[in-house]
Each structure stands twice: as C-alpha cells, then as structure tokens.
Length: 549
Image (cartoon, rainbow, N blue to C red; front, side, top):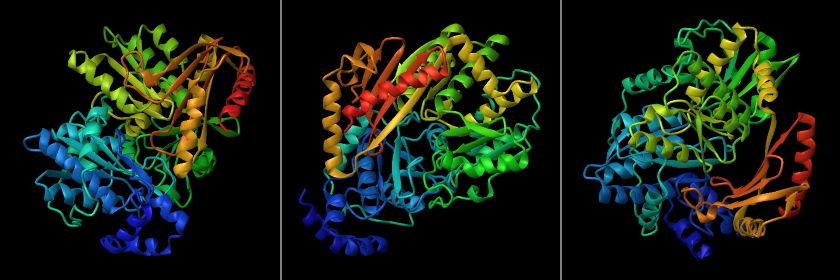
C-alpha cells in the first residue's frame, strides 16, 4: 500500500466524522505511516485497534467496510439474514454500533440492536435466542482507552470460525473503505427486556448449591471498571439474595476514558486498587471486578490486614473444584463430565478434573475454541456433559446458554462459592492451600512483550522463528517434547503457538497475541513449595529473555 497516497485520499474523503479530519491534519510522517501502512486485520476475533484516522485504525470507515464485507457474506449464505448488535462503554462504541446497524440495514439485513450498553455474553445469548445469522459486539475488552474493536459471532453464538472469517475477509478485501454509506440513524428493532431477563434466568441456573444453606449477607465490594457490568451483575447478585454489596462509586458509571484505571484490566492491582480501598472501609472479605465488556472477572480476597489478588488460574481451579465437589456430593455429575480449558491454562486443573472423573479437553487460546467444544457436545446430544470451561486470562463459563466467557456467570458463581466456604469457616485462601497440599503447588506466570508498528510485527515474527527452531532446555530443565501448533495438532486448527514440555511437570508456551501487538510467554512450574517454584520460574524466564530481544 502506498500509505502517503492513501493518506491524501483520506484527507479528501474522510468527512463523515469531524474528529478524523482534525487528526489527519495534525499527522507527521511517522504517524501517517503507522496509520496507513496496512489495513486493520480482520480475523476470528474480528477487528481491534487504536481509535483514529487511517486504514490501520478503528473508525467509522474501517467499521463500515468490515460490516459491508460481513453483509455481502451473509447474503450469500443466508436467505433472510439477521444480526444482533451490542456495544460497551468505550469511546465511540455507540457510534460504531450505529454505523454497523446502518450498513446492515441499507443492505436489507434485519438488525436487532441492544437499546443500552450491555456485556459481551448478552450478544452471544441474544444471537442464539433470536435465531440471528450473526452477532456483533463493539468492544476492545480490557485494552486501554485508546482501543476499540469489532467482535463477530456466528449463528451459534460462538465467535466466528476461521473458515467464515476468511470468507468475510475475502469480501472485505474487494471493497473500498469509502464505498459503504455512513448512516447514523438506521432502521432497527430494539431488543426487548425479556431477552435480558431470559439471559439472567440462565445464569441463575448455574448455581450448584442444590439446597445447601449459605450466609448471603457476606460483605462484597464490586467494580464494573466504568464498563457494562453494573446492571446485570448487581441485579443477578441481588436476585440471588446477596444484598450486602458495595459498588465502587468512582468506577460505577460507564466511561470510556477510564479515569481511575487507565488499563481497565481486573488482572492488575492498579485497576483493583480503589475497590481494595473500599474493602478496607467496609470490612469486606471479597472484592470482584469485571472488565469493560464484562466477559472477564477478577477477584481479591482478604489476607490478614491486606488483600491478595487471585490469578485467573487460581480462580479457575477453585471454581472447578467447587463445581465438581458440589455435583459429586449431590449426585448431579453427568455420566461423561467434561472440562474445557486453554492449552496455556494451569495444568493442575487436569489433575483436579481427573480426581472427580472429569475428562479434560485442552484447546487453543481463545474462548471460541471452548465454545466450539460445547457445540460438538451439543451435536452429539451430550450438551449436559459440559460442566465448566476457563482460560488463564480470567474467562469462565459454567453453562451452555452462551458460547463465550461470561463475567456475569463468573461473578455469581464466585460469590456463591465464597459464601459457601465462609459459612463453613473456610476462606478461599484456605481452600487454595488445601488444593496445593492435595495436588502439589503449581505456579503459572505470563510475560508480555510489546512490539508496536510494522517494525514490531516483523520483529515478533523473527522471534517466533527463533523459538520454532527448538531448544534443548530452559532454566536447566530438559525439553522433553516440542509442540508446534502451526502444524495443526490433536485435531486443533493451525495456530502460531509453540509449547515446550519440560521435565518435572513444567512447561513454556510462546505465542503472539491475537488482539494486541504483543508476544506472550506462559510459564507453568510445578514444585514442592511456592518458594521453590518461583526459583525455578526465574531461571526459566532468564533463558526466555535471551531469545525475546
């Protein structure tokens, strides 16, 4: 692409959003190259990028072009296509939702639009509930405020398959970004309240108390992190009887600038800090937060005079053990129970599942692969076999009513689990220690390395090439098995993921992020003690850093 020529064309034609013209006129050569050196990539995760002017940015033109491509695809594959659209609190999310609706409506596609911002899982649910051809969520998940995105679901409520995404991309590549008409006032059908009600009914069905008594007056602090979680999370908790809930006021209302948490990710302490301060004020034992589109949920629990953030893996194994133990106790375990988790998630979960007679299916990173496994079970008439799915990046789902991670479900189950154990004098940290003693200590740590721009993409590819050549050892531990998922392993789709199985039940996974300009390394270390695990992890990471440079 001649980025300078394309820049000049945008100066002339990008007039549908006045913010774009202001930005275009301020660009220097470096900014022009970054914004126009390529088209924003469309894949199974849809689009995601920095908001702004350019072919490599999220704006009304790149959104309209992607939507026109999707519309062309749907009209070729569906007799009467219909699409569900939702959006979160991010900057221009409502604008992009209207532009998306406008392009679809202009192409004769039936549009169902959520009348208010709501979480990602409600789009997956509504797509299935309304029997739509596809669903679109305008969101950039937990990325910083400068990002936005465009997430596409198939008719089953699962993220678009590789084949479908490739077909849509082929349609997109035929288009000029200025061809679709930008219409901010489309004709749509707004989704009725009964659909949200039905979604919450399904969430409440995920309870595994089966009649056991719990103290529902436990003190809980909750933060929506200025996103979409406020209404559905507080409603589901109150309807379940949890009334002692304190919401973090500064992070209560939707705000795409995220003024008190520039990186609205419940994985990090900075985003959780205000909530932790509230915990100390009200004497709460549990703090939970959902990311802006409410598909991820992070928690912190009281630890002496302070609070400890649990990792996605730790929360995942706690929920897994809780669900399995309750189902076993009450005779509610299906005949062929299945856990589905990502290949980078804690290996200890496999051992916990095996203890309860649960079969583990490991899939590639991305919750769409967990959704695909649910669909396979459904096709065999064994949908009820699925009891839980999770990924280390704080995504959980215990039911089959949606096909994406659901922080509303996670918040509900976490609070139930917390109250169940607290009623019996057990803290979540006590329970975690019990799991370590039973199955051995396991440490999982993720490191991310940022590579911005065209040079960064090239550098990431070079580093993956170095890892792909293989290695004899990391941190003094022998590489016993090397798996290159780019070859398509165990029936999984080809993916740019590498796994090194090390001696002593340790492993390393390396992959580029599918949504951010980052290279990620996942370290899993098993050891007798936490101290020993950290020592081993540091040695492994030291060797990895030599290759990521």
